[in-house]
Image 1 (spheres, one colour):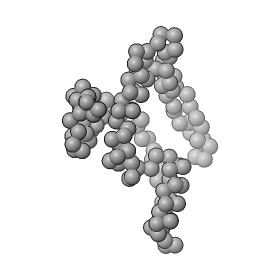
Image 2 (cartoon, one colour):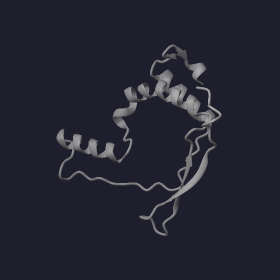
Image 3 (cartoon, rainbow, N blue to C red):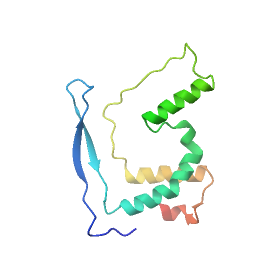
Length: 128
C-alpha cells in the first residue's frame, strides 16, 4: 500500500463541457489516479464494497448502463406499465467534496446498523 515515488502523481484539475446545457458550462473533474492515497483507497474499497453491495446495491443505480438493466428487469417483472411515468432531475451546485469526518461517521453508523463491529477481522475503529 505504500506509494511508489516513481509513479506517484499529484491530483490535477480539468474540465469537460456539458454541450446539452445552455451556454455549455464546464464540469470540473479532479484526476486522482496514482495519488499517494490510491493504495489505501483501493484497499478500503475492496474491504467495504461487498458490504455496500449486500445491503444497498438493490436500491442504488450506479450509471446509465445499470439504469437500462434495471428498467429491462422492471419491465420483465411487470413493474413498468403503459401508464408508468418516468422523470429526470437536474441537480445543480451539488458539492463533490464531502467533509471527511462526517463521511467517516456515516460509514461507521452504517456498519454498526448492519451489525458489523469488524470487517474481515479489522475493527471498525481501525477503519475509522
